[in-house]
Amino acid sequence: MTALPVIIGMGGINAAGRTSFHQGYRRIVLNNLDTQARQETFLGLATLMNLVSLVNGQLQDLKGNTVEQSDIEARFGEQIIAGTLIRKIEKEHFDVDATPWQQKMTLTASDESAIVFETRRRDLPSPVPTSWQVEELENKKVKVTIAAQFDIKHDSTRDNPIKSAGQLPTGFDPSIMYNSRYQPRGLQATIFAATDAIKSTGLDWQHIMNSVEPDKIGTYSASVIGQMDDKGLGGLVKARQQGDRVSTKQLALGLNTMSTDFINAYVTGNVGTTFSTSGACATFLYNLRAAVNDIQAGRTRVAIVASVECAITPEVVEGFGNMSALANIEGLRRLDNLSNDEPDYRKSSRPFGENCGFTLGEGAQVAILMDDALALELGADILGCVPDVFVNADGVKKSITSPGPGNYITMAKSAALATSLLGKEALQQRSFILAHGSSTPQNRVTESLIYHKVAQTFAIDNWKVAAPKAYVGHTIAPASGDQLAMALGVFAHNIMPGITTIDKVAKDVHNQYLDIRTEHYQCEDMDIAFINSKGFGGNNATATVLSPMVTMKMLAKRHGSAVMDAYALSNQTVTAAQTNYQQQADLGQYELIYRFGDGMIDEDEIVISDTDMHIPGFDKAIAFSKTNPYQDMF
Image (tube, rainbow, N blue to C red; front, top):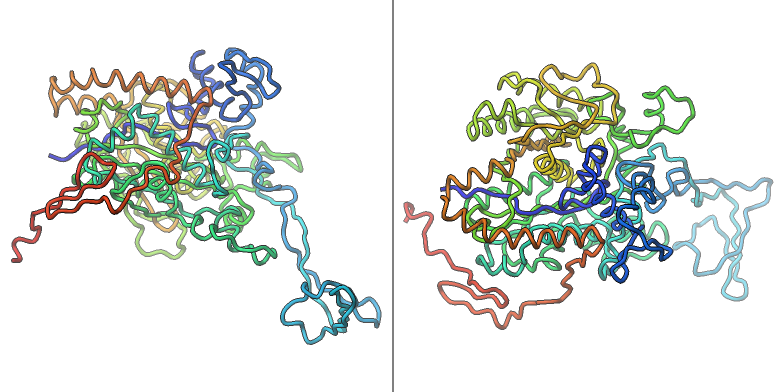
């Protein structure tokens, strides 16, 4: 009997806000929410953005004035809306209108005289160029005479043509929520996301760990670009060029595996599986696939699946920009028939519409999965399940970044799996796609053609398509996590996000069998979500995700009424804990989990026998296998 991987919690952060309890999703479909959900969303964003805080049981603004929850939209609504989703890059990252760089310059004497200047002796280059004549002066200074031309670099600025990104909400600062110790932004976001995900489950983490053998817990996570701000690899590679020192932390903390390591070392205390794989835009799905496979095989019973990317830096933006991959100001002006006017940066990302490139985003997403038996035993809330994730490459290419046939395979396999599980009618009537939807002219054609052919094959008409990158940008590694978060939101709220950043679907999009709308709309209960990634280099992946309603029916069929009745009782306590955390999170009371040195294992107390191993701090032992998997060879 194959274990079913079920989703019991999800947390994180992106340009739309917090992931848990669908806050980010609700920000996207804000105008379609009922009054209570809308007020909750504004409250949660106001505290997240540090516009409002809880002081002595009362909400207060930055000036200490009391604020009622019902007044938050009226007082801060415009500021919250302006400070979320895709927008002009804020100076917290860098100044896009005056981006610093080093201007090369050749100096030549204006007459027959040489170039002469004074400086400190210790500031001379080593070795001193042969064309320089150096004369000693007082106070450790020297006079330099140069008879030849002199090349220098000096501080300058340039107008960056790429001016928008999906940034974390304005004012959100995870570094002040815990002792962040000069950690890169991506790792700070990881601590926030992991805490949010774990607390969203409504289960005590130590109770979860003591419910299984220690080696049956796994963390599956990675970045693609790595931690590219000044505290990570970004600072490492340019420190000496800027005359600074390389720190002791920049290399280690900059690695793209660090999100996995931080979750293990500082959040969960995991001693089980640790796994990191990168696959461009499909990275979250690659790690999800590994977790799903391990749960199905019984190697893992609890899986933390994560990805993070916070790479809105001048260097990364320029790298993508010089590939003609990003939407720039001239392209947006051309699309909107503007002369020199400022374009609407909110609409920089336009999946399946007339577009000119994708928009970079930043975020961290974490999903918690369990096998079905453990989830029921613990009374965990069921958000859905992931029966499988398919990954396929593109074969031979000319351009490494060009599309290929791999995504046809992953989408067709996913649709076939859904049909075998729930039947054709569920696939045709109650499934939808969370598209890769990168917002490039090539993607809108090639990705829509895949959906067109799969829909045609499986007789799907008006296949619903949503595209999260229209709102949060392309977060690279966690992009599929953004898509999963939106899918869970649709399952919970029955609001299908349209692509409101476009006026109409582009003429070259293959949408004969697709339902791509420019407005959000109510939908019936959905059974199936397809999380699709069509990544650089041939990194294609598609996950089949089933709704909580369908998952509960599957669990009842497998486990029977007695188990489900017991589950319903234990789930009441979990639901109460979830409600409490949601209320605290909306009030900004996050209390991030950061176990720096807390609960370290004394290796002298590890007890090993020939049958098992006991690790201090864990109730259950790690059992050693006695089965010979190669019995036929001996």
